Structures are given as structure tokens and as C-alpha cells.
Image: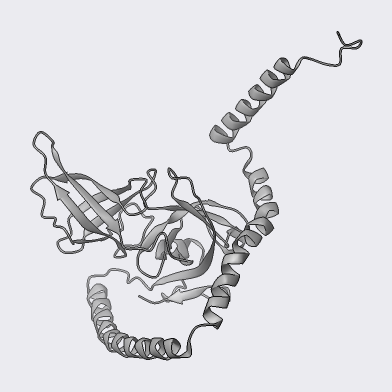
Length: 299
């Protein structure tokens, strides 16, 4: 039976029109960034959902900590006490080296790096897409977070902020295939570029000459080139050096030293140039007053 009244275009025409509108929105968002304000508004709206999704894991960790065995806590406390004594002894030596380094830099007429301000953030969500290595954290532009900001965990570099919303931020991990960072071999200063492989436990080093002095076990640290990451932070350790006939460069892979698949808290870092842009460095070379939620990490 044919309908007595024709109400609007057919289903196929409506599908085509909807597809064209969707494609136009994708192109506009990709090239013209017209929907950043809308995305930020949606991110604020979805923040309670992200918080509720992460709530069970938080509660589970709290319960696990509360029911821990007392003997285990005593042993852990003893171990941490011994580590604290060891680190305190090392810190005394670092203070002496820092003072000596500052004097030498003053003699050379170079400005001494006063340190970095850091903000502690907690993971809300991990992207389960095997081709995208990124996480969502619970700090955003209202806390001073900015796009391109370096992110670390307690061990090494984790990545950088790819997108910052008022209450949350998306962090692109160093193992993402889209990510690259300048590094150097801590042993001899050999420079290279570490790129993500798409695997959580592997980085690839680009354009390493076959005769380069690089070995399995070498520590890779940030070189400071490019201006994104402060120099000297650990990145990865070399796991394989392969030289194949017919190839111009050696094949070098490394394993990140950061706990990319296990860390629950991260550090959002402000390097010295960024602090100077924000007016946080005084004429005397000190750091200005920061928000109460910001910590200061002295080098």
C-alpha cells in the first residue's frame, strides 16, 4: 500500500544529507578549529561521567590500602625509612654539586635554571584503542595546564598534553605513533629522535648511524632541543641495536622507563621559559608565588 500523504524526503535522501553534514563538520573541526569552544563545553559536561567511571577503581585502591596487613605496613615503613636515609645522603652531595654548578654558570655569564613548578594530576581514563596511546587526567586549563605541557611520572617522561579543557586534559604518551621527542644517550651525549611505535613498551630511534656508539642498556634522556621537554629527564633504556646489511642506519629500539601502563598519578611540568612567560620569575631570579595546588620541584 502506498502512503496517503508523503511526509518529507525518503530515508535514503535523509541518510545522504546527514552524511554530508557530518563530513562537513569533521572537515571544519580538523582544519578550522571552529568547534574548540563546543568541545570544551562538552568536556565540562562529561566530566562527572569520567569521574564516576574512575570512582570504583579509586574506592578499590582505598579499601585495599585500609585492609593491608600491619606486618606488611611495618616492613614497608622500614624499607621506606632506609631509602629516605640513603636519598638524604645523596641529596647532600647533589646540593654541593648544584652550588658548584651555579658558581661555574655565573662565571660563564649564563643564567642558572631555578627549577620547575609541577602540578600533581590523577588519571581518570585510559584510551583502550590499540592504535592510540593517550590518557585523560583530572586537571585542565583552570589549573594552568596548557597544550604541549610536559607530563612525567615518578620515574621518567610520560608524554605531553595534546588537548586541554577547563577541568580535564588529554595526555599523548611517548609511545603513541604520532609522538616524537629529541633524546640523547646519557653516557656519551649522542643525539637522536625517539618516536612512538604504538606499543606501550617500545620506542624507536631514528637515523642512528651504523658506527654510532650506542649499546643495549644505555639510558636515554631528554636533550632539551625543541623546547618542549626540559633537558636531563629519563626517557627509556636501549633494548636492541641491530645493524642490517643494505640499510643506511642501525635499527635501535628502547623501552620507556616510565610506568605508562601502571601509574595513577602524573606530574604536569612548567619549565623555566614557560614560567618566565607567565611572569612567575622575579627580577632577582626567584620564583613568584604560585597557587596552593601547585608544588615546586627544586632540581
